[in-house]
Image (cartoon, rainbow, N blue to C red; front, side):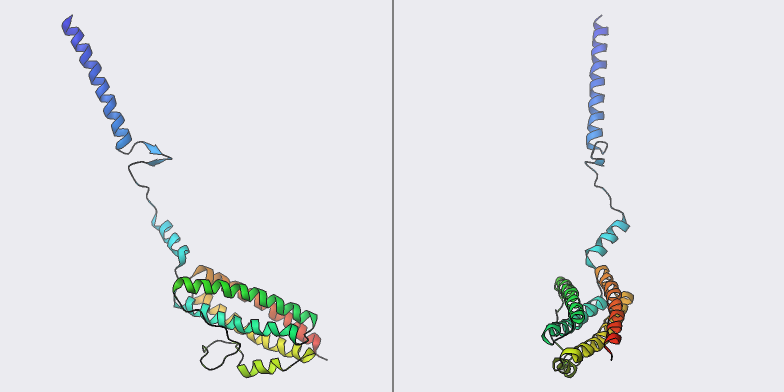
Length: 216
């Protein structure tokens, strides 16, 4: 009877020890989970997910920097032109268009300036024309002399000159946007370039119709 009692006790202790060992293995060895992820084994992230996160965080190239800096300067001039409309007796339709251009491009300038600051790049100062020291290679930019001529016009003459100059200005912006879409790397900048191309192409068509209607 003594042997039988001891044997039963040994078997019971062994069973308890085995259960404890299994529990330790489950908790510490990677079996137990919290929200489906092992508490001892870090979750792995796929290379494609990592690449996607890095790209969305703001990869950019020199084409993005050039587009952003030059488009800010380009927009500055369009805003100056738009500001002249209510001061020079423009027609209601021209004033409405000028206000729309001003609102759209001011918002885009603010966004692009933020990008440049975050990249540690220079934010161009405001300037009204393509004077000495201005960046070259920007299609559609008016010379300071041309801007002065616009300042000297009023009423119907202002409308015609404004529309003619802004059509050329917009055509230059569309060309710059096309280059960014082809050469840029920064997603938001390429998206803005697409928006600029679409919006300003539509406005070019609108201004051509307005210009044709204002011709005697």
